[in-house]
Structure formats: C-alpha cells, structure tokens
Image 1 (cartoon, rainbow, N blue to C red):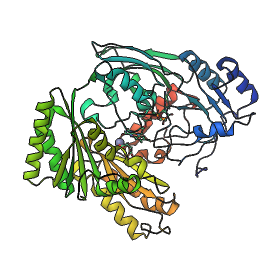
Image 2: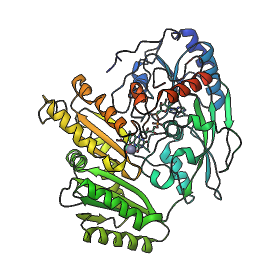
Image 3: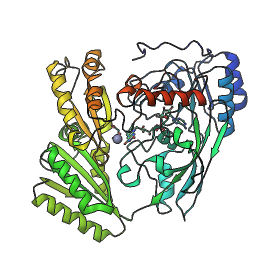
Image 4: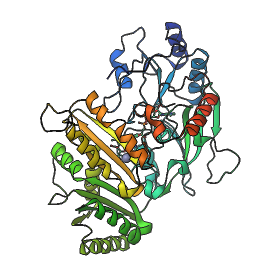
Length: 489
Ligand code: FAD
Ligand code: MLT
Ligand code: ZN
C-alpha cells in the first residue's frame, strides 16, 4: 500500500527545499552520490529506494544521499538535525519489516559506497570493515583466510553488514556462532547530531563500563548510523556435511532435534525445519528434483561443521541410522559433495522467494517454546479457512499457511502467502497471532525486527516499563526524533 492509516507526517520535520539539496550536492558531488528527485526528474532512479524487498511498503522520498566516509555521514546528520530533516538509513534494503523504507518524505542515506574491508587479523579472527560491505563479500574475504563470518542468511548477496547488525539478524547458524550481540567486538557510528562514536575495539574482552554499541545492535537505525564494525570471525570448518530428513510429525521433528544435539553435539552447526507446504511450494514454483522421493509433513535440514571429514561423516551416518531405526525420521539423504550441499540448502533458503510467487506473503517471525512452536500454523490455517479466506480460486486471497525456520533456536517463520494484500485477511490475523504468542511468552519478532510492520505490537512482547526505558534512550540519543521516524519507537 502507499498510505498508512493512522500515520500522519510529523509537521515538526522540514520539507526538503532546493537549498537543502544544494548543500548536500556541494560536498557529496552531483552524480551518483546524490539522487535528486526534488527538481530533476529522477523519479525512476529514486523508486528502488522507496520500495522494500517484498513490494509491500512504499515511501515518498525525493532525495537519496550516498556518503563515502564517516565524516560525510557526520556532516549529513549534523545538517539534518539542525534543519529538522528526517532520515532513514538504508543498507541492502532486504529487511522484511519495512524498516529501511521511508514512510513519508524522509531522506534515504544509502550506505553502499562505504564498502572497504580494512583489515583482518589471522591470529584472532577479528575483521574490521565498513558497514556498507555486502555480507557475502565479507564472508568470501575471510573464507580465503580460513575463517567464516559468524552470520549467514538467504539475502547474503545483497544485504550489508551494517544492516545485519542494525537488525541483529540471526540467520542459519546462530545455533553455532551465537548472536551478533556476542560477535560484534567494536563499532563506529554517527549519532543524530553528527557526533562520531568510536568504539572500534578489536579485542574480545572489554569490561570498561557500559557497552554502548549494544544499543545500536538491533536498533533498526533509530539511534544512529553504523559506519564501521569489528566482527569476531570463527575458524572455518574444513569438513561440512548436510543431511535432509523427511519426518512424519512435529513431535518426531522435536525428537530428531534432541537426538541431533546429543549425538552430533560440537559439530552440529544448523538445524532447520521446513514443513511439507513450504517444500511443495518451492517445488511448484522452481521445479527441480525433490531431495526425497516421497512427500512428508515435515523436513529437517541438519548441517555439521567439524575438522575431520571422515569422523564427522561417520557420526552423521550413525545418527541417521539411529533415528531411522527408531522411526524418528522416515527417510533421509546425505549430500555427497559441495554441489549437493548447496542443492539441499536451496530447498530451505529458496522458501522466502518462492512463497512470494502469488503476489505477497504475510510474515510472522516468532520465538515460541519448541513444544508449542508449530501449533500456531494449524491454528492460523483453521482460522483463515473458517473465515472463508483460504482456497484455490482467485476469489480467495489466501493461498496457504506454512511454517519453517530455525528450529535449533526456537524460531519459526509463520507465513501466509496471498494473491493480494487484503484488509479482511489482516483482521483475521492481527492481533490474533500476537495474542497467541503473548499467551506463550514468546517473542513477536525473533530476528527480523519491528520496523513499520510490527510497530503497533511491541506491547505483546515488552512491558510498559521496558518500552518506557527504550523511549528514554531514544530521546537521549535523538532528541529531535530525526532517525528513522514513524517506526517502532
Ligand atoms: P536494510 O533492509 O537496508 O535495513 C534494515 C534496517 O536496518 C532498517 O531499519 C535500516 O534503517 C537499518 N540500517 C541499515 N543499515 C544501517 C546502518 N548502516 N546503520 C544504521 N541502521 C541501518 N533476517 C534474519 O535475521 N535471518 C535470516 O535468515 C534472514 N533471511 C533473509 C532471507 C531473505 C531472502 C531476505 C530478503 C531477508 C532475510 N532476512 C533475514 C531479513 C534481514 O533483516 C536482512 O536480510 C538483513 O539483515 C538486512 O540487511 P540490509 O543491509 O538489507 O538492511
Ligand atoms: C529465513 O529464515 O529464511 C529468513 O528469516 C527469511 C524468511 O523469514 O523468509
Ligand atoms: Zn530466518
């Protein structure tokens, strides 16, 4: 949609004038560093910055700035703060909650030009890089030196490390490498008044007072702009194995996970869940040979990363034998080489794109205790069916209801692919889904953040006191409220 009911433009913010634009052009240059839709007819060039990956949110920004250095970011923010111009930091624009898109006419500050990898310490594994570096490029850089970036996700080819840290992205191997709250060792950021916060510690331990960078990890661009990072990378495992299982019930999937932790322990690096619907859709949209002959209601993808190929493969085979003979899993396949590993992963990583095939998808990214986790898919499906909204004809807005996600982290992605975004569907889903999660003390956002999509629902996962404290911090760092306004805070 291009209008947001209940939201009005904050009249405290200035409207962009030719004088403002001239100021930015003077020090950033005229060409690709400033996309000026105020006077020139750059509408087409500006549109990609006004629309999110899901084509769900649309902004009305008329100016995109592409700073090339921390000093330029600082100069931009100081000027915006003094002139009450609202801004939205934008990385790779792959976020799934509308956080990187302007709501009205906020200026987009696009970070892609700040993409230098500064240094890598092969002894400690600490990587110093600009926030605008693409995740895959950063991982490639450390891979050549025997290390792995501690985060991996389906959007790795276009998301930026600054965006990853700003959303505190979790991804496919959080189970193994932990959250970015642990692996970000240092940060440089520019605060809304232009102050450069330099906390570029490259060491693992630093207990010297408040760890302020933690506030910006997951702040979704509401406190400042991250310009540089120090990231602790792990030793890359030389032996990777991947298996995919077909499973008859969610109870058995839980057993398989418990058994995987027991038997694979230190070499387990991912445990992902895909339901039958998600795999049927990937097959329907993309084609290709299915990894297992028969269809199952659930599939799990298990990855091990260790240092001894033979030993790890043996462990995985023994695990497979055990869970098959105990009828925990119904069928399974182990990748025989790197190409097959990639293919098996594609059945998991391809879901996000394939479920958008019919027009869009309502996405809920939730943490729920494992025992109840999949139940929400059944409940939501029944609710949409009862409302007459789910079906096979064009008349029905809802195509299906499905779940997949990071089972190893109790993180489910509940998705409702639709033929069109529809107010009736929204009314059936919300606040029902959030109430469901609240009842089970879950989180309404496990890893994607709140952005615009979930701004009205933070209260389902955080109490009044917590929200009040967040507001105090926001006011302290950004008293004029210019940083990514109208979003969750
Ligand atoms: P953007 O989308 O550009 O921005 C995201 C937020 O961060 C916005 O609020 C923006 O204002 C802010 N921001 C961006 N850069 C900066 C900066 N330098 N300083 C301050 N604020 C900034 N997420 C997961 O957690 N796990 C997954 O497994 C996962 N898989 C995905 C798979 C696909 C196919 C897609 C499309 C998305 C996936 N995501 C996943 C969503 C995830 O949030 C993003 O992919 C990624 O973390 C966002 O990075 P980005 O550079 O695209 O940021
Ligand atoms: C994933 O795990 O695939 C991502 O978080 C994206 C999604 O939720 O679709
Ligand atoms: Zn995810």
